[in-house]
Length: 232
Image (tube, rainbow, N blue to C red; front, side, top):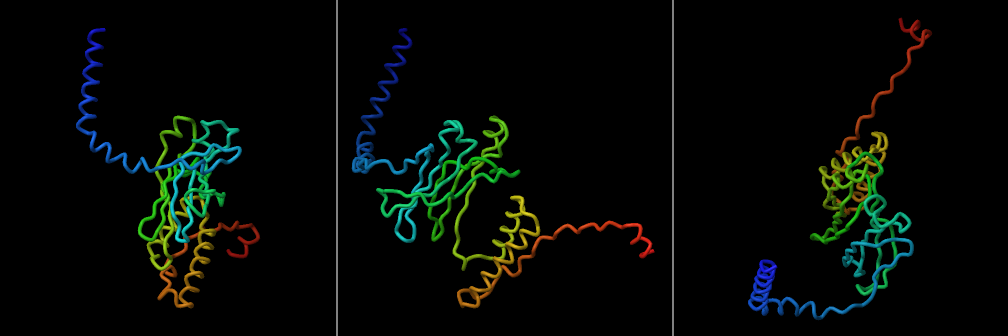
């Protein structure tokens, strides 16, 4: 007991010394926080757990709030299995915030982000907005935890999009289970959009026209006896 008492006394003495030497700095750090005032609840969604909000001021001056949410009926532990990222908007940071859309769900495919995007963190980088989040590849509890990764999605001014972006987009679609035919269709629509931008003098050239469509596997034709006889 004496040893424990000595250790506690020593720790308290060290804490006291740290408080004395850091008092001025501590007061300076608190000067900003002391001006904060509790306003109220930003988002309260019936039937959902709401977690990990991240706000950002949009180009139109409104506050966009990105949150993790998952159904209450699936219990609190379902944050790692049933979570999604939703966006709410308000005319001011104080609210009230109104639901807009679901920004991100798990892919439900054989990808690293198959399940439960969670913990959104949105940032403005230059003129772009990027959203960081975590997700997992599914499986049992240990597999879900072990497979968690950090992902990022974002927007970009179309005038800054290059051939490389188009090639990365093509590969992204393939990685998420799109067939070559589906990817080719998406690329055609995208190329038309950029061609229209060129026609309207919004772009100097359509760099995405150089993005090649993925090759579709050739269909094997069956050689019937009748056809075989006609060929040979």
